[in-house]
Length: 242
Image 1 (cartoon, rainbow, N blue to C red):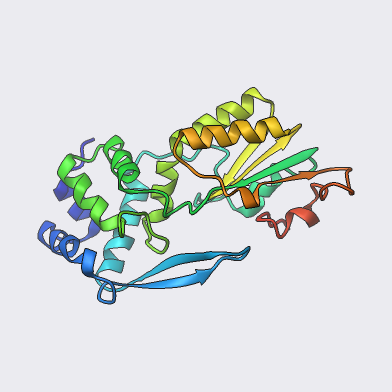
Image 2: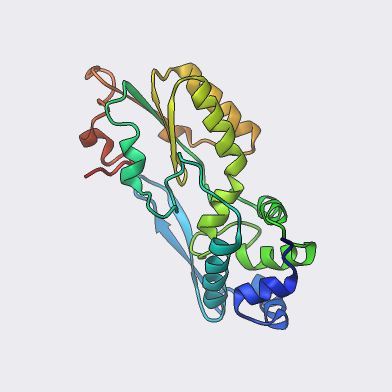
């Protein structure tokens, strides 16, 4: 199905004219339509979080509900972030008792998703060009996918879908288990440095950056090297288990 700008307006719960007005005022809308906050990350660093105001927040929530129902995205089995019925627990459960877990973290995941990726994702979902451009102006801020907009989680999964498939194919070919929880990638089994380099190359070729400071191997039965892959040691490293 093709989605026109009228379809987009219906999905947003506003008229086309209202969306175009909001779109034209958003670039200079800080303080009026949203507030920018700086938040400290759990494991170090700072992230930019946006708090939306009316009517931007209402449009964002409506678009999120509509995108969830009309877009054809079906989360791959290995994706556990922003997927109903999946969580950090289901993510971690795929790696318990494995010989080794390789964890890799994507650098500034949401902000690294720019207008081009969002535009491409919406085109693939059947939005007409005018609708694409209007939608992009309503789901990005400063040319990036922002943390805080209701639409960002689903759009991030859409933008990463091709890379998800590439990583899943690679993991299967190497006999590894693979999961992704937002920007946290985990591979388990007989994981080696070669796998780490291969995965980094796949990500780099697709235009994603690895936060090398957070790349870590967690091995079983090697207390002098790295922590064992148990529920206790996975907790606090982005894996929360019951």
